[in-house]
Length: 449
Image (cartoon, rainbow, N blue to C red; front, top):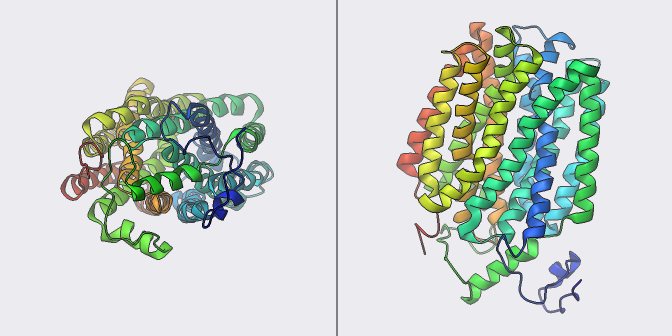
């Protein structure tokens, strides 16, 4: 469509990506990059469907089809532990790798890694095959979902990133909820394994095809933004980037800075861990809790799907809300609301009441989830923004493994699921206090340079 960029010293890496150069510098903004923004949203929708297929059927089938004892919560949680450890590590790897070879190749690698997942589950003779399948699911999610977030941040303006991450996470988590409902019905019609096999193969094929055919490389946008800041030509709101790193830091420097050295980054990281501990509870133990209280697979799918759909849809307004009032208030309120919804599950009974609690949890997640990502992006320099997002996402998704170990241990020791809900509610309340006391507002308009 456009002629290739002129060769110049130091620019060979952009040419190596075979990225077409626009007639003007790579401009940021949702409207000007709308077509690519939409395709990235479609991508994260497919990624959400890939993980959402496990949210309803698999925890219940673990006992019925794979013979996992009802009291063996840690054994059941093993598939989440494998997923969380792999996804957490590969989030950071994906961020660093994408700054060298580009976002699109990493995205495509994520889809290729997903191909074995439905085959391993379908032919699994025992539960450990499912654990192995989730290693590949962790690769898929760590590479593919990471790149959809990073690419949207690349092509949008600083003051739009709440909206951008809200739309991104809406597409992903609405798809998670939808997949839980659809696979529940399919499992009832054709059986759990055939349902997961057919659904997953269709999703993976569509995700890989659209990534190859329609997704563009966005790394040049990040490099152009960095150059505009360096030249003093940046237009609009000027972010206050976190200070304390060189212009091109090493992997260890970025990881240590984001994880421990910078007060706001570290507060955001621990909040990410807490919200994934909660999501682990709702992924594995919530369906078992509902099933143990007499709900069918379809009814359980509607309750757990209601959580996912509310989480996804609400991000369409919670992301833009943080662009107006700031990231910190939405994150703190989201943690408190999520804690209240988690605690409410054990205090109510009946499908309608549990669905209401699921909706409360979904709104809480929507308030905090996209705005944690936006807050990290706000204060990350374009040169190392993908790496800092990867470090944050490392801690956040390692929360799956930590949550599976801790919550599984609590349920195993007590022989009950309810204590895990109360522990999670207390953890979320403590996490909100940490953000309230340690994190600074990051929105560039409210905390300008």
